[in-house]
Length: 292
Image: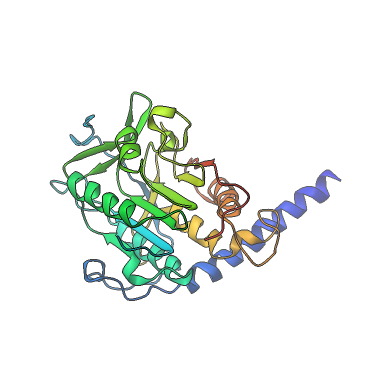
């Protein structure tokens, strides 16, 4: 019996690996806003060597309406002061994520993309506008890719002119109205975003927070080769949400992939196919299963 169960798991992982390539490479990279179309297309099937999204940057210091049914704010933070801390991955992260949302009924004009950089003021203004447009019937997606850090049991995203810690981010989102909200952080030391501390909880009762790392671990991206550079957490997450996570043992094969199924898929794929330790986390406050 033990050998039979082991064989079943191995066959499931092999099947997922095959579906991973088909599903991911079939996600269309649609024409994006002008600020994210300045780099050439390349072959997304190539998975080069891995490097992590982290640096001991001086930025790592603690610094503290019309309505539509679907709204998204995507931040790809690539350009930091100087050159040593710049990243390539966030470009492809936001392009892939934007394409996925377009395939799920998000309108182009309702997906706001910031790339290659964003300041604290620009982020505050963008979230304020997002909150102002939200209603009780709105679906919201907030996505960040870039450097991350943590201090005093709080995670933070690193922007061009400083960090935004989760208590500050929680304040920015405090008036958000939504029946379905997904927060995704593909950055290092992001695990506290998915915790349940009341003073710094960024999520409401109908939300899910996904992080690509724990509060003390790294989030990795690809580098080198001929393919695009992207975060491996985002790679597997979008792959899963694109359909690979709907098959057992991750999903129920009902033709609709949920965020929860995609998270289970991502955890397994990072553990079984990825050469570095990376542990995503999830805080799920959504009633039932969330499908975008």
